[in-house]
Length: 131
Image (cartoon, rainbow, N blue to C red; front, side, top):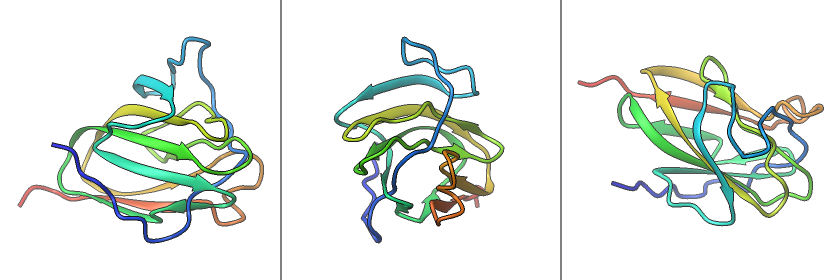
């Protein structure tokens, strides 16, 4: 089942870096990465200069989900989820979709390129525990 996220803030931004292979795969703990211009993801994040939208993401329960990052900014960005992994850089105008296995808990996500995080390109991921 796909879960659409409402945009609550303007999108996340530019210049975050990440490692990845030429074929779009990554050795950073993320699997099944696809780079393109659209998303069929369970959850979507948007990037523009120095912000993510939404800045707070709630996932209903632990599990494996397709999460996309669309770069609406003018410079590259990445998505790093502390304790989970890091995506390759996403060029402006493109979308990266990857499957992530998430455990219950609270995690910070950020863009690790340049000083993007210091300029406010951060967010919080809350993965709820089953009740």
